[in-house]
Image 1 (cartoon, rainbow, N blue to C red):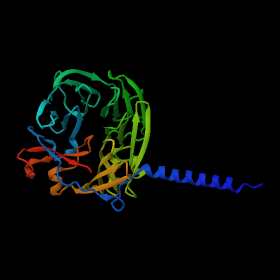
Image 2: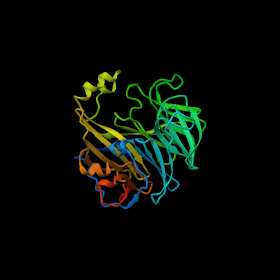
Image 3: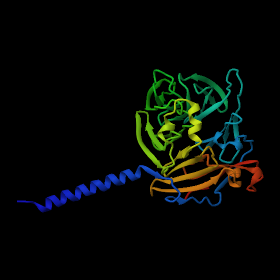
Length: 356
């Protein structure tokens, strides 16, 4: 006898699974487009920390990087090649300023991170060496055996690197490299097919729990990984304004510029994450014009996106630029130029905006 109730239940189950799959697919996208995202309102600062040191990267805040460890803020000023250890009151505890060619010195700093015990590790040189400092004093230098553009400590003191280019036979085309604390390679993954674009702007951000967040600048994907491999991927919905396959497949820098002059596409400048939010700085490359900048904030719980447009030649951008950090207690951090604001008498300030 034909069992109608059985087939009805099967049909409902299939419908439920289809809806679930559709929902999962939607969760894997961050909607960025202005007509689909809510406006991001910053309001008044929650905290202002006047700095007692001069910061030289105001002209290009992309050279600024902030990390937060054990109640301290560590500010890398890429322009002056200095790293500041700053207390919660804004006082500079010490400065690492070792530019030179001698022992314990460096010519550039590409990135840095801070271990659980407060030791500072600088990614220096061409990205193939790491220098260890303790309370501002040089301790040791390590050769890592490949060239990286960024680094981040993992939960068990293993270290993740984003490799610059495909140039090491032992690692191949993989751009994520995991080493132990002595910089011995333990794993490598996330194969990159384009050797020209790899390492040109990709960065690692401390994720949540045991994972690390990374992005590839000219692709609209975010990746989360642990020491064993990729855990998940999330796509940013840029609509039609994405870099075409023809651009991503270039094999020579000379081929890039004619393509850039003809296209309009978004790309990621930097990304940050805590338990509640993903924060992205995004630029529109419109026929080689990069004046339009955006702050994109994604609320993980509500799956809602908030966007704020900031023109590069505006007074607002001159004063505070784009956010350089997202704290674990949901504060967006900017570096304010004291010459252009009356917040305080200090030349520069770290300014915190509380997210609601």
